[in-house]
Amino acid sequence: MANLILGKIRASIGRLKGHVSEAKANAREDLRERQAAEKSPRSIILTKNEVQGEWDASRVLMTTMGGQVRPITTSDLAQFRHNMKLAQRNFNGDGITARQVIDLAASRPMPGSGPETDLDRAKKQITMAVPASAMNGQIRFITNAGPDSDVNRHHVLVRFNAFAEAANRLMSSKARDSKTPKQMANWLRKQKLAFDCDCGRHRYWFRYISTIGNFNAGRKEMGFPKIRNPNLKGVACKHVLRVMAEVESSGTVLNFLAKHMEKLHASKDNTAKHNARQADIDKQKASATRIKTSDQRAAERARAREKKAIHDAAKKVKRIARKPVATRKIEAALESGQLSASDLAVLRKFNMTDKQIAAKLGGS
Ligand SMILES: [Zn+2]
Image 1 (cartoon, rainbow, N blue to C red):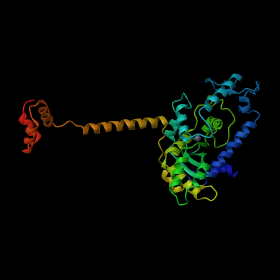
Image 2: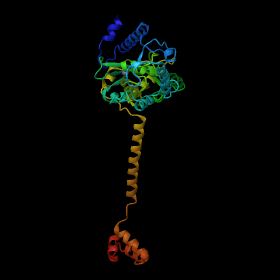
Image 3: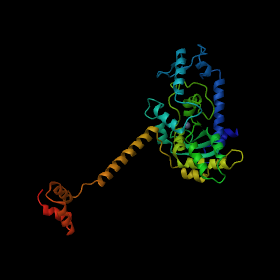
Image 4: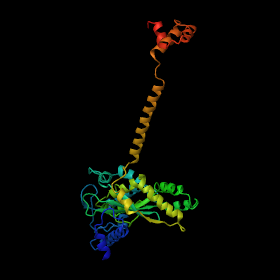
């Protein structure tokens, strides 16, 4: 009961106090609803075994594959399995990097037809994503909710899979070494991770993908998204995408992770736990990192290279700028024999400038 009430409280967006219990209450409620849905005699969940072909033909379940709502057939199940294989090809091993999440959201967007992708929405609507607390490589982020949401914030959980490796590497650096924890933080944020979000988009569209891709940090979802996402497009909701951009390139997250690594470095048993300060969160609320895909980064690098090339070329031109007219005239006269080197030396002895000498040469 207490949790239910807690879950319903509309906490102010950036309020740190109580964020962990709020996130946990949301996760418990999600689990309760999911279990009830599967237990119900009218359950419409398409289970793992059914997708694998153990299909009761008398069961009527619907799909939107092909664009219209219609009953599922056994050939759909084969297509679903095929879609799973296609989606899984994009992932390998344990987890996914923040960069991969952004790139996949750009290259396999969901929806394919609508004007706005999750990436577009992340850029436009999610303006805040702050790390609130960290415990042994699991970071809880708070983001604002989109304009049409019935809540005012979301909780995104990110689990850095290489935390144990970071801990072991830190063991060999000196106690007072303050550089290494920051370097480890910068390394860690580029490694593979898993994530979870408490929004409906993650729950109904993407949780299944993160489960079969092995980058799911929350409840596993074994029910195939036959209505919402039968083609298994996309990878993450707008909240997760915003968080991934922050993980990848914001100074705030780097500093937060560095602090976490410092605690880990100083701990006796390779564990670490720390919270952000409310004042820091209030400071960061307004600033969001730009979300860039690898393609955009490459384009920016190419533009920078081009700009530098133009700049370098301009500098070179300046260096070999043509000599003054008078000097060139003298050189031509020397070449043609109109002027001898010894005569020139004499004229120079009289402190004549090139301009004066050229004037004496006259003509062309
Ligand atoms: Zn979300």
